Image (cartoon, rainbow, N blue to C red; front, side, top):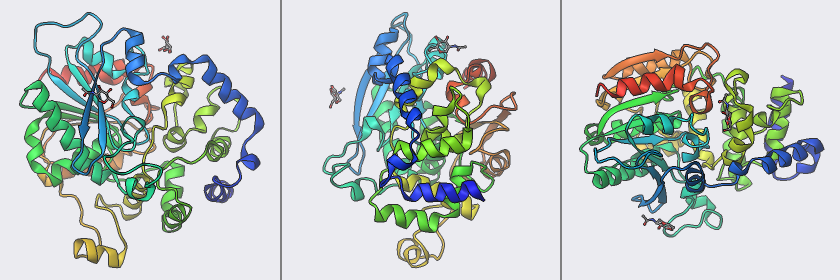
Length: 410
Ligand SMILES: *[C@@H]1O[C@H](CO)[C@@H](O)[C@H](O)[C@H]1NC(C)=O
Ligand SMILES: *[C@@H]1O[C@H](CO)[C@@H](O)[C@H](O)[C@H]1NC(C)=O
């Protein structure tokens, strides 16, 4: 009970009293880490340039006016070839950005795809640091309107806009869609709400798939879910529409999760790792300060609350406006569920036993609801966790190699 009480209290005070909760040595340690990692400060195009890769910046405006940035790496270090390279849409997860695929220098999924001959497009959805812009709304001055979206809104607007842009640009009929975490949710929502997009996808790879969340085990997400009836209204009251709690909040959570002064402790104090956990054996310590500089990359509070709703309801369904709000928006007392019968593009599921967010039983539910699962694989490492899909030391051996060999069949 104690950690829950502490965490609830912390959740309520981050805006008001950072001095009380921050441990002095924590800040110093964090500052030192930042100082040693140049890569923590560079933006994705600068990082790619530094590592010797070409990077194009593409701007796409969604139908609702968000200015989105896609980072594209058309070919690898060795330069362009005359062959047409099949395009891959590589979708990051919540609190992340295109940096997910780039930071793990030479070992990230981006580099494996380039070596295998693909043209890689890395979109940044609305609200992330690269796409924190709108035709008319200012993310700070018009926070309430700007941040009034969940992943549903991203899935039916940003993702299809970017897919259309890419298809138009590369002149290929279909593209590969590879995603991590929330990136997979976006795909399932898009293909059930806008089924015409199924035919634009060659094949989809879900890494750590997220749709049903009833069995999720992340303590922090469970806590938010448990109190979502109070957390939502409270965050609205203090005007926190953007999910960017101060470091002090996570410093405290970090102390609860990790306790000791290990090098890994800063991770526990980062929103992403506080929610997803981490696995010491797959974590490259040299990379930690760099990851800290790029994550969390920004998200709307509503995205997290919508996941909390999924956990509570045990259903994969639209945003819950409450009894009267639902009647108003949907004409029903409860929000409508997504109809996964409409997802007809072929899907591969890659999941793992130790994932705090994507549990085996929830993935099993998802795979029963999908019509076209062409393969289902558990990562052969029982400790593999949610973020190891991005940064895991053995991610190539355990996962990427298999994905690439499967891609060759489609
Ligand atoms: C996208 O926008 C950025 C900044 O607004 C600009 O520097 C860049 O040239 C644009 N890219 C394209 C392809 O238009
Ligand atoms: C850890 O990350 C550093 C910095 O990117 C890299 O040089 C090193 O090879 C990585 N080590 C492993 C075991 O992947």
